[in-house]
Length: 505
Image 1 (cartoon, rainbow, N blue to C red):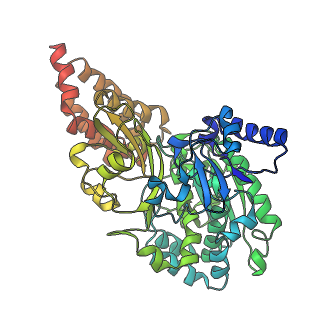
Image 2 (cartoon, one colour; image 1 turned 90 degrees about the vertical axis):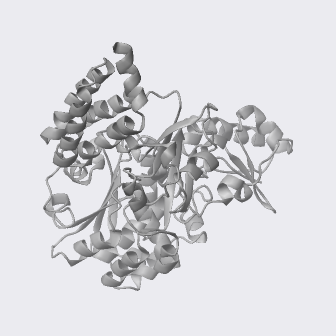
Image 3 (cartoon, one colour; image 1 turned 135 degrees about the vertical axis):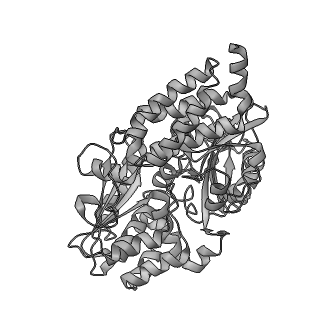
């Protein structure tokens, strides 16, 4: 009997380790031959710990298992969810990047290969650097870390730059609220990230790579570090990648806990051992990045998607999506929502479908009031915007941004003035201090919102003007995007501001 119990951080927080211990203990006590596999998560967090049992009919799932139920599980008395792949929430997905996550043992390279791993790298080894870059360009892949910049253009810039050394840097500093895709793929399928970075190295002529991983992810740090060691031992990394005669190696570096280090130039400064402050552009990191050398800086999901593109072909990936948003988007559904988790689907599903159909509405049962999309710098989208398709340009036209595709749901009890204040306070606390609009503007923003809360209606135009200054004058997205949640709260939920003003009067 083979039993799968997730080792994902979310599953562990809900008791997966205790369930795994109970399975091992009960199996030994009964003299059963049980193979316990600690897999990643399938992304259905509301069902965790989700235990799976391998049968001739497929893997049968059991949701919200606790240690006391393990005996019934082994006796076949526990009610099942049926085949995991047939669960409606899972079956409706288009799983490309996350196809292996939750299926394989994260640190079993043979298991990874059995499920399509290394096919893309082996294909890339037979291609020239320019062909590799063209394949990525043709796929339409854009940065999944927030900005949505075309990956192929970034790679082409680095590939054409003249330098004695080039680098691949993976931005795994996943600091946005309501986001967890990077962590899930690293904990559940780390070799996909390693393979993607190796392909990137072959494409642009880089022989060194670094993963900048946030310190708040101890499980991800451990798993990725082990995966890198295994990859090096098996010839996937090193001076002769899979016998190709071409070199690429990488290492994991841990951040110190600054939100602003999710911005690529701050990350590079931190990676070099400097204070994590934003660099002015130009020069672009693609030309003068890590240690002043041409550097590809991509998000985890962007790089973990590269093996899929090379395994199945650029056109296969580009066939999914909407407009200029090609491929799939890894939606991270969180907050006050009934069914939270990771849902991978082609770009194009509307925001309302994601929240009400996939997410099941609020966990509290109260009406949905707003959804913040794109982390703490994302706009609050009201229900009137729920027909907006999930696409970069489509969200931009509605005054929002997809960012890292995290969605945090709020019901009608949320106070949007307080949420606007939180956005400004967050910026004030996390600012690197490099530029005045962000460093000073956010502090003044908190003070101005406090004036509005006390009934000073004259402060509203001042807040609007301050947001325009921050948006136009900040060096990076922290100060530049903080106006999105503030102004969206003010624009779409004026009653939350007016009520306090009237009360004060």
